[in-house]
Image 1: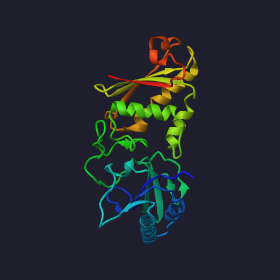
Image 2: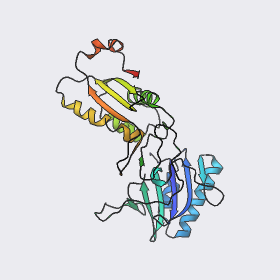
Image 3: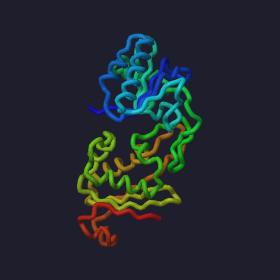
Amino acid sequence: MNCAITHDFYLGRGPDAEWVASIDLNQCACSSLAAIERAGTAEEFRRRVERLCLMVCRDETGYATSPPSSTWQWLWPTSHGTDRTYAFDGGAVWTCPRGQRWLARAGDYVPPSPEESPVVFPPARDTCGYTGIDAADTTARRYGPLLGHTHCDDIDELGMRILADLTLPPGPGTPSELAALRLRLAPDLRYAVTADSSAVELEIEVLGYRADDPAADLARDALASLPALYGWTDPDGGPPRFSVRVLIADAHRHASHPALADRHTRAVLTVH
């Protein structure tokens, strides 16, 4: 079973909610989290969260912080960047993934409603602690699931990491979002990537499609999602961490790119 890694816990919802704890789980503790989701009172919720914190510290399966002895442990400024947030409110525990919406109550799915408002969390730090490309400085941004592993990368390092994620065999613990992206791309595709540091842009040229192949548009759409996966999206229209430009190569592109003349070469990175 796949479990989120970072978790925040609150009493109440909204900007005045009381922060109870934050936990970074290196290993899955799904049964304990399920018990927390079904807490029937605020006190029971707090006790179960505290019990999980103690278990995590005792078994060294992760890292837990809670007030008043500890402060906010994450690099992102609010729970919008946390994998899963839990809040006891109105007699039940609500859960929210990455600040998207409160989608479950007491473990049961809650369908979206037209009257829903954007999720608001208490401010935890003034700026985002990520130090990578144009580090985030607003709580409005929604951080992608692969940002945490790349937040210190510059644009060429990021390009290399993305190429590795797209072409190397997936390893244990591959994020589900990356696995879903790879499923949208044919396994025999090859890539020529140009990293432009001045424009903070990755130009991704895809080799392996015939002219007018409808699947090429699917690949273009899939690769266009990279800035959201490895960076963030900003509802206020702010700039992304980096941009991508996806090109579909013609059948003779390998002739003008010597490194790709060898059909066994899966990917090439050029830095400008």
